[in-house]
Amino acid sequence: MEEIIRAGRFEIPVLHEDNHLLVVVKPPNLPVQADSSGDDDLLSILKRYIGNKYQKPGNVYMGLVHRLDRPVGGVMVFARTSKAASRLSAAFAQHRQQRRYFAIVQGQMQGDAFLEDYLTKGKDGIVRVCGQGESGAKLARLITRPIAFRNGLTLTDVELCTGRSHQIRVQHAHQGRPLWGDARYGGGKPGEQIALWAYRLDFEHPTRPETLRFRAMPPMESVWRLFSREIEERGNNVEEI
Image (cartoon, rainbow, N blue to C red; front, side, top):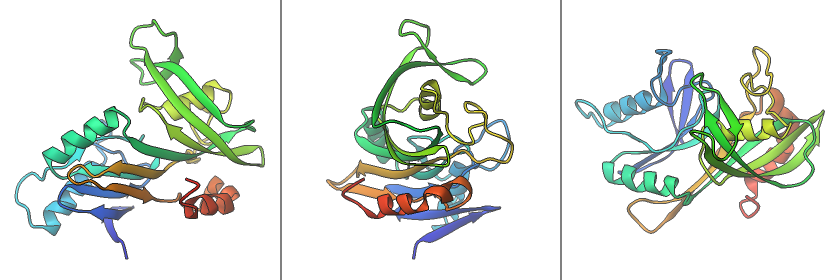
């Protein structure tokens, strides 16, 4: 039985814990790290969890090596040692890991697509597609594979080839297929939860020759219920994903 960290209204499943790593499922709407909102954040919660569990005095080390947008949930790994943080950060920077997402987009997608765009982030925090030569332009690549179409929406499996801010949301919107519930890039309505979930994370352990593989399926609520069968099938088929 997996351990659950409880913090206020949030429940955070622990998928893996050892001396170097902590792998958890981030709930939607919980910021990964402290921001201007002043709300509690996942990094602080995990530091408290380790400090309380092992009775560690003072500031607990917890390395942040990748991020998920605040409204997005799914699998995340944190480093418990500086050695692990350095090696995992290098692995993520060099894309030596497998990150996969479920996304529900508006409209029907016609077959697998490799999306390549240059993105820039404005002072307003909005990420936009831009020209290659524009100031701050960063190359963003992903592969999106439609799984099922229903009620005017497509469930797609997204594989990141780069790790740019908001890239899944922006690149799909640029193709005319914004994510359902995305208030920033897709006209989502108040009360809708963005349909984006990090369901798979595979990476090499930072201190031993072992590939770790983690899965977490989105909660079968709201629009996710439309595709519950396909999500369950994809989640249970290890060879497929």
